[in-house]
Image (cartoon, rainbow, N blue to C red; front, side, top):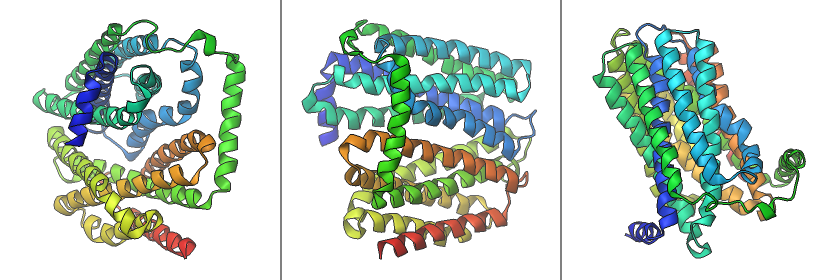
Amino acid sequence: MAVVRDLRVLLRLSGFRRLLAVRLLSQFSDGVFQVALAAYVVFSPEKQTSPGAIASAMAVLLLPYSLLGPFTGVLLDRWRRRQVLLSCNLLRAVLSCGTAALILLHVPDWLFYLSALSVTAVNRFVLAGLSAALPRVVDAERLVIANSLSPTAGTLAATAGGGVAFVVHLFLPEGAGANAATVLLGAGVYLVAGLSALTLGRDRLGPDPSEVRQRLRTALAGTAQGLAAGWRHLRQRPAARRAMGAVTAMRFCYGALTVTLLMLSRYTWSDPSDTDAGLALLGLAVGLSAAGFFTAAVFTPWATGRFGTGGWITVCAAASAVLLLPLALPFAVGPMMVAAFVLGFTMQGAKIATDTVVQTDVQDSYRGRVFSLYDVAFNVAFVGAAAVSALMLPPDGRSPALITVLALLYAGVAATMTRLRS
């Protein structure tokens, strides 16, 4: 296979191989930490989980990516990136140990969330540093291939980390000890990830001090001004603006359904006292949704050739609207698992098509700033959906009103895209 051949070529480069090891270990531990957070917030026997608590957990996971993302590059262009990968992973190991201690001490939820937020906030610097360092270990001819394979490998590592955390948690006695042990597992891998950065030279990943010209305050102000310029440019690109609006609305629906699924797994499909059974159901749903994502990645290139990018977004939204009510309204395990796969497929299919529209419709000089805005909107929509779900969902997750509203929103996206395209 071409992918295997390309990866084999890249692995011959020692710098790429060592940087990839840092990425795999870092994102593996991210997966462990995310599952540990979900297990503590949603599946702790001693906690009465609410949609509001889930919304808070999602905010902890996603808002640092959105709010810090555009500004991390300014700092990464001033700090040695090897030291960023080392220090941030070591810091996350320490912070994770602190989070595990807070779980055992049964502290107020706000203190736990503050600790978890600090871990995920530091993570943004690690991921941005890995991307910024890649051109220093791969030549220009292979950079496109490396940009394709390296993040994909990281995503697979995060999925594997989540799977390992699920298994570890299921085999430990229920309670705070199991949650704390899972967090400590993530802390151990963070430590190994940080130490693995030492295999790279101190200055190997840049930046070159001679290339840093702007003062930090000027650079930060310039970033904010750049985002405003990206927004003005986006307003002049209707195709990209429509696609981003459509996929943001679909992301909102997907986020609300994720909260619904969490509550059903915890309180409706299993005995609330048997948290392992609920966690296993959630793991199955996450796996099926991931399978939908993968299937969309394979199928979407053909579909966009057949329907066009805007047409494929419309098809994904319409299919979601038509299938959501019969699959979700019974609130039964089987149909809802099918929904997890189908809606994972349509969400990722629309996302891939939107990425393509933005890449082709937006001028190259504005593309980075527009994608930063896209990232903010995409993640904020997910957190906003969790907040709305917290207001509408009952404790058992059964809300026909919410499912109906989401189906109408999917239908509205399809109808709007159809009208604008015609």
